[in-house]
Image 1 (cartoon, one colour):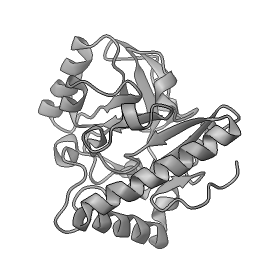
Image 2 (image 1 turned 120 degrees about the vertical axis):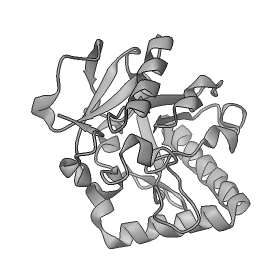
Image 3 (image 1 turned 90 degrees about the vertical axis):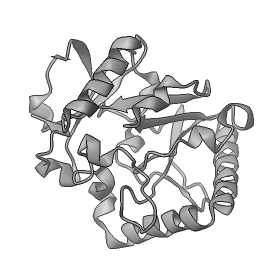
Length: 238
C-alpha cells in the first residue's frame, strides 16, 4: 500500500499486524504514544499497574524496540501533554488527510488512536459527526469506557488480565453484563491458546487487527510479543 504523505501523528503501514488487514478494502492508521509513566507528568494508561501490563507493554514489540521509534513516540506524548489543543488540531488534520486518501482509493479508512495508550479519545474528538466515514477501534483496559455511550463508528475491545483479582473481576463482570462485548487475552504462545476461555469461544486475533469485524461475545486470542514474552504478572496467560 502506498505511503500516505503529510501525516504528522498517525502512522500507516508500520505495524506488522495491521498490515495483515490492509488490502483493497481496508487501510489502518495508528497513533503511537508513550504509555504508562514514561514521560514525566502524564500517564496515558491509567489501568497499567492494576492490570499488570506495564512491564509487558506492546510498546516494546516490533519496531518499538528501536530508539528512534521510542523518541518519536516521546515527542508526540510531550506535544499531547504540553499543547493539548494544538495536538488535537493536528490529529484532526491527519484524520482528514488519511480519510481523503482512502476515499480517493475507494478503501475503508480505519483508525486506531490508542496504539500504545488508553486515552478516551471519544471525549476529545467528535468521531461520529466529524468523521462518519472512518471506522475507529481500540483495545482498552479502562473498563468504564464501555459502560458509556460510544460513537457508532468506534469499536472497543476489552483487554483481560489476571494480575489482580479486582481487575479480573471488573472485566469478567463487564463481559457477563454485555452480550455484544469481546475481550482480548494475551496467551504465552500460539500453542497455549485454548478453544474456549472463561466460558467464551476463542477466535484468532492475530490474523489481522480489524477488531470491529469480529464475532461478538468472544475471547480474542493474541500471543505475547516483545517484553510480554517474559511477563509474569498475570497479564500474559499460560
